[in-house]
Each structure stands twice: as structure tokens, then as C-alpha cells.
Image 1 (cartoon, one colour):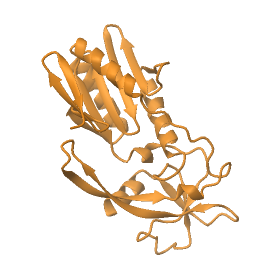
Image 2 (cartoon, helix red, strand yellow; image 1 turned 90 degrees about the vertical axis):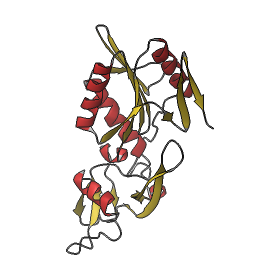
Image 3 (cartoon, one colour; image 1 turned 60 degrees about the horizontal axis):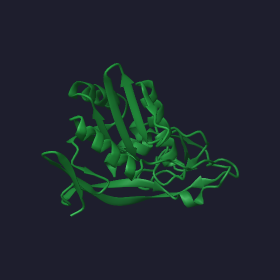
Image 4 (tube, helix red, strand yellow; image 1 turned 45 degrees about the vertical axis):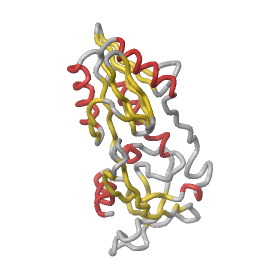
Length: 231
């Protein structure tokens, strides 16, 4: 819990303010969860401060909520292309992805349980960044990430807006995005690493190395093919 709370403060997620007269204050709760490795073994436990988004009010503290995710057919197509051209492919994971999203609506929430400011216990949090549980959280994260990719020279594919394409001379790269899970492939290792470094300078992101597991599917390289399975 302390690690998550520290991350919330580091991202300047909120400002403490008096409760808004007649405003909607979204409550939240601590959720304990865990992450597993590709082989199914336990990686680590973690706690998240999750808001009760079902108490939000349309037109008051949220509006648009749709957020695209990459299509399975797009994943297979890009992996086939990378294999045929012998391109390196890595998988990346974004830590606290939703905390990177910037809200356009004014949202108030209660202070996290067990971390209420003793000097200001009656104050509420006016959010600057998105939080897990908010209806618009996936959308704000996608918008922030996509906007940054465009500054790096990527463009959205017309066929799938979660596929981002980079072209510069003879260099090319494809980036697949499914919420906070990323697959990146490029013409060479130098370009691949250059993009990863740029992403890590902007977001808390971990390079998980050569692609081996994505969206519950294990990726096994073969002499002239890739085997995708869920054994």
C-alpha cells in the first residue's frame, strides 16, 4: 500500500481541496492483487487504490469513455511481418499506466483509506491525473500515450488505431498497444533500443526483453516460424 501511495504522490495525482458544495465525491477502496510470470508462477503482490467509477455522473465528472485496444488479427499480421524480415521484437510493460493519463473533467474523490492527511482530514482529492476505476481512465491513458508516440514520429494505422507505425528513410517500427501491454518491433536493434529509451524517459516502463508472452499467449520461436499457444 505504501508503495502505491508513494507512486500516487510522485505523479502529483491530486490536490487536497475542501469538498465541493453539491459536488460528486467518488469513493474508493484498496484492492489487493498479484501479477504472474509467463510460466504462471507468482511474480509479486501489489495494492491499488481503486475508485468506485459506478458512482460517477455522466456530464459531471466523465464524458467519453471509449478506448481502443489492438485487434488480434493485427497482432498476428505484425508478428508474421517481423518474422519474415528477421526484425527483433520486444515486449514492454507500463507501471501504473493509468496514473499517466491527464483528466479533462473535474473529478473529486475521497482520500485513500489509511493515508488520510491528519492535518486536513475533511479535505477531498481533486484529481489531476486519472486513477484505476474511473470510467475514463483507459481513454485518458491511451490519449496521453498516443500523443507522445506522435511526437516521436509514429502515426496511427487507419486499419487499427492501436497499431502505431514509424517510418524514417530505411528505418521502420511497429508498436502494438493493448492498455498497458506493448509489443515493439523494428528494422534493427539500434532503432528498437532508441525508441525504448525515449519511452522510458517519459513513462515508468519496463523492457521485458524478447517477446515471449502477450495477452495470455505464449510466443515460441521456431527455425522458420513462430508458435503461438496457450498451453
